Amino acid sequence: MSRPSWTPEWKALEDLAQQQGALHLKDLCLDRQRFDLFSWRSGALFLDLSKQRLTQETLPALFKLARAQKLEQAIQALLSGAPINTSEQRPALHTALRLPADAELWVEGENVNLAIQASLEKMAQLVERLHQGQWRGVTGHPITDVVNLGVGGSDLGPLMVTHALAEWRPEDIAPLHLHFASTMDGSQLAERLQLLNPETTLFIISSKSFSTIDTLTNAATAKHWLVQHLGQEALVLKQHFIGVSAKAEKMSAWGIDPQHQLTFWDWVGGRYSLWSCIGLPIALQIGMAGFRALLAGAHQMDQHLAQAPLESNLPVLLALAGIWNINFLGMSAQAILPYDGRLKYLPAYLSQLEMESNGKSTTQEGELVDYATCPILWGELGPNAQHAFYQLLHQGTEAVQCDFIAPIRRYEQIRDPQARHYFQGQHRLALANCLAQSRLLMLGDAAVPDQHTQRDAHLFYRGNQPSSTLLLDELTPSSLGQLLALYEHKVFVQASIWGINPFDQWGVELGKKIALSTEQALLGQTQMAFDPSTEGLLALCLSSDPLQGTH
Ligand SMILES: O=P(O)(O)OC[C@H]1O[C@](O)(CO)[C@@H](O)[C@@H]1O
Image (cartoon, rainbow, N blue to C red):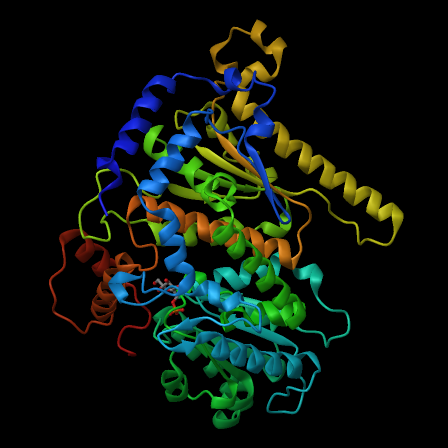
């Protein structure tokens, strides 16, 4: 495939950007048709791009670029299980994980859905035992607390969804509290262990590779804590650990009972794995029925991706708006701004999804790109960010594209009418702020005509910051599944247009290797020469290491 930047379609977009670069959003939105022209619905999601700096010429030109880059064929290759992760010679089949139970997907002579359904079944049995209070620790007490030990995709997805859907916890299950510990320095685990009872605590060691040092170090500390309090190492391993990984042999070598191992496949990328048994904490939180509803929502979006024409295909539209901003309007930052506290961990999850997937600078053909790829993506709950970094969005020097995300309806399940009244009032306030902020970012101080009488420069809002608004009818397992699959596919569409592989992450490997040799130096076990800066810092750490001599 030719580089996108060498195609006539790219050149046409550059010309368009030259002609339209000076257009301000406040002028574009004089067109009363704009909302109808630039908004679309799929299932429970409504996407509004009318606050993007798009015109009626821009989108068709972007569709031409997408077609020139063979986007439709790329989507087909993704969904059919073609080996599109070329640097690791395998498919990226997270979409297979959410197929309906009776669907078939044949990849290299095997219907992969059989193994997927069997894995879900084993997961359901473990969930059932814990929900019924039948899983007991070594002293015979039922498990009440489950700690997920994992990092990256083995932490961020389950953490985010578990938090987002906490209200969907079935009422008729045994009390079960979920906790997450990811950081290698042990701070989260140390804090948790102080509050937990070893007799009633179960750990999930969640690691696709089962070789991630962060997770294995936390797991070793957890095992030591249990054995210290309960003795009986063999029983502790059996009764207090579940393993989730693509490497069954490594779980067995660590000591996890095969009955308590859940396995998945190399063709599920870590950051795309919440749909697999890595999603065990989600199923523990919302039950298997809720977990299956999440999968079904994602499948609905997969079908939309496969079937909708590019012109009304939500992931394609979201991706193309991003391509326009990044490659033709020169924006290198993107903010994720949910206006719902339940989506607190969505920005961190999307940071991994987008930046680990598309933070690349070589094409699939091994050439250096001569265009920008993934922007720096960060975010925070919108209402909190208003009191933190929105100042930069409104008056800083950076152009930032923003994604505003909110449910339309909330708190309908609260039975007490008075409490419902107060909470729905709070949600209305959040929605009002969401719409007001995107409007102000678009229009600048033209949003408030009186402001024009102010001449002081420090009061000036320039506006023209583009944003997308994503409204969910309400936040449910299904709508969240649709939203997450939307972003997964947006990432894939952008990667396809940029000609990069979104499914590998070689850029994180070297850091892991050199951390090992650096740890050797901190243990005083290497004569290896470092650079002067690192040597200076190592010397400082070594001179005050309380563990020196005890290793
Ligand atoms: O599940 P694992 O194998 O422990 O990996 C955790 C994370 O580490 C990474 O490989 C990056 O180091 C991520 O891609 C992955 O989600």
